Image 1 (cartoon, helix red, strand yellow):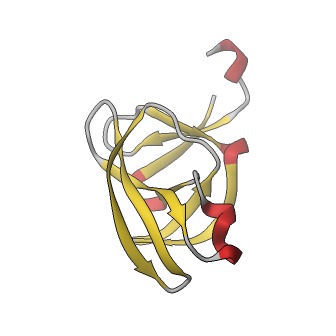
Image 2: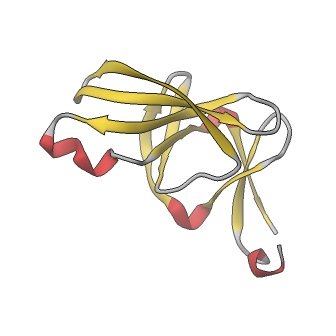
Length: 106
């Protein structure tokens, strides 16, 4: 944790498990299931659920729910596969819902 001093971190809103770093935020303009979501390049201390195909406004995507590895709370989802060429930048990235994460600075 010493190397994270001064870093803004994101935690699970339920158990305060560390799940992401602010430097990994790609965009804050995404829509989650329950409101605003952030697109992250990486997430940590999470588990990934089964893959499902979902139709979004931007086309067909294969996603998997992302769970906190400590309390099993659904935090968002991971884009496993994106079919529209213009949306490929999302592949392998994570949507963490603003209502499911808490930002704190160390």
